[in-house]
Length: 165
Image (cartoon, rainbow, N blue to C red; front, side, top):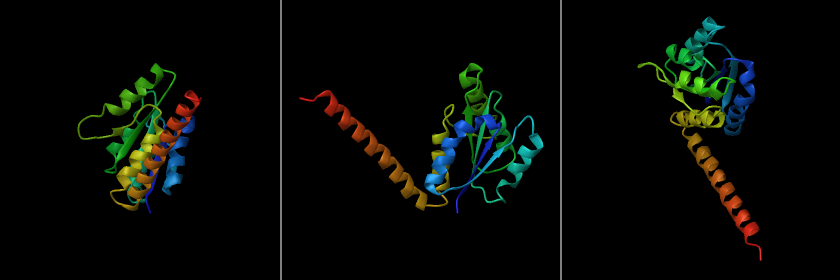
């Protein structure tokens, strides 16, 4: 069974992270959620990454704000795909988090999504896991079709409202 981990640098990140958890539930992805800080619990964050593969985790989303080094610390300590989710903080509207997450040194890749982009982080994780679990591709296709149908429905409703006769 596919398994993802979401690691937050602070419990205050949870309101953003919640959307990723909902997406994983929708797709039937087993999810481990932790609060571990690159700066306040560095040993525990490193140990989590070192143990992730043997604990059955396929992909990790590292979520952090401000000096957002968590995804990089996780990537430095394992070979699993790491997705960085920069969290908007009171400083620089999250630009600091984005730059801290995306500017990784050569040899330590972190895929990075938009500031507060939890939904895309989860969907990217599922796309990665679909390489190992092909049945997820059908679920992803259905998800995209549902989005398409919603937009077409919204378009039709708006046109009907605007051009009532």
